[in-house]
Length: 271
Image (cartoon, rainbow, N blue to C red):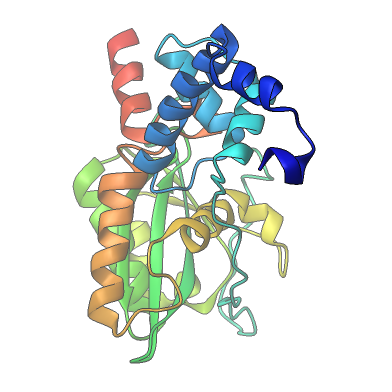
């Protein structure tokens, strides 16, 4: 080896017996901590979130060092996956005005909810997921899955959220202007619970950016995405992702890098 690399034997033995530096020991320790955090996130956290979790644990580390150590350990989070739009706004049903106007900050829970539908492909056929997000904590408070995109899909998601949260009158419910949200059955639920309906402008995904952001996370981080054998398998994975991982574990940059459920507990503690 020394001959091939053109290194003297004395230099080689000197290197072998040289004690590991303090910085190298520190790098080894930090790399192990990074691996734990990265694996606990199901290999989905990037540099910012790994650094933030380490700081929470009392480990001081720069973002540059996290980047270097993750690169050396070959720790790469999953990339975004493109998905198909599911909104059908070509209808003559009544449209609600855009009350949100891209203001996605809300100081208290159960004041503003946003929702949307996305498509999950399986080898058995398409599965559709409708969600309800509390804008204050970014928590998924209601969801529904079905093999079609009929109005019952969004009705069931909203009904779940209403049963769980029991909001007061005046809740703003913001969605796109898809036919499901404009349907007579959906408007009845809205009216019966004194909800104020708000809708995005036609063809403008940024007006409902919170829901679009969640779907982007789901498509990037859901285990097995694009390889589900059937709808039942996809439903089980989505349930686990929403109720166990996203709501209770995954840190969210918008809410001080904590999970939605933790953020709501923090609000209650402050009160």
